[in-house]
Length: 476
Image 1 (cartoon, one colour):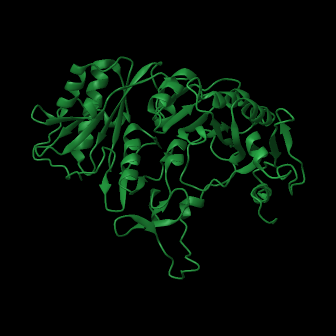
Image 2: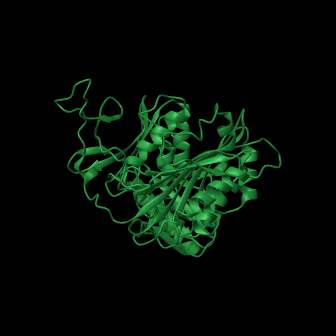
């Protein structure tokens, strides 16, 4: 299994310190660079990588090391330098640890995990050879078949790092699935969960009893014909596959009192050089938490302080190609959003998935939801919005066990969508409560309230009835 080692330093690692770290394999090891020097590899005698080092990242957002590594961090700003050992080579892990130990000693800082960076000595690598790397493999890919790219991660939280983002893109371009394999104790960042495409991509969790299972569905898995697939029960039929469910997936599912307020919305703005992006997200954030987002980035850890101008500039520079962002809150109020900005025929679209975490005894500010909805509907070109309340971890990370579905709390239909519907369909719904108008009476958006109680799943029945009605389908 590959090992990632992260060094956190107050000062930027200087070239001599990095070179000293790379000499942990001795002076005769080959060094190769990619992506204009942003990625450095320590290689065996055949030029195959034993260890890969990413360029240091300046983190200016408090709490990211704690969120992703469970590690204490220096005062912001600090530098995050990540080294990744190659799969199946024990010496690769030792090289990554020695590199981190040397860097932390020379620059001043700490390494994660602490046990990996104990020795400054040169690692004996004479005669060590790495597995040949397929031509299409990225630094984060451990196994590549004609069906999937497999990434093996052993860390507390799998984050959407630059390496993993490259693996997602490469797999998509090659029309391959991406399967992430982790130990039982690992969780996913919501950013990875939201980015993980459908089958054959999946999160594969190692398990002592069942071997492997899908961390999101609980289905028992096996490696078969170049990818992880579900195991079929002996009693399975084409009509009833009866996929076995891993015992670990349904273990420890008692209600802890932790909750998440989940918000997903789409806004479509007219294409204009004066357009400022991220304002809708900031407005929701302020209504729910009383403060703006803490930071953002195009990968994890989120490393930049929140700035509407910089956020907009990055999306503008990358247009017409779409841009993906992650936005995070403060450690005191966990919150995380993934944002996709894309140029379409309708204008500039912002697709946002956002969640706020609340612990036992912390009240969800439900009264802020309609206020946030009205701001989005009247000032930020809202198309639609769904708000849910769900039983899930306060820290927002995704565990490999059943957490249950969210329950709809409210749905909002933007003013243009309301106007586009024939007659008075948007107002005359099969629900018991009529929608609330948001904005001017001549062009209102509509707010549809639901129960929003995680103990009562009837909210989904109401939501499905509403969707069928709005689409012009027959009543349930």
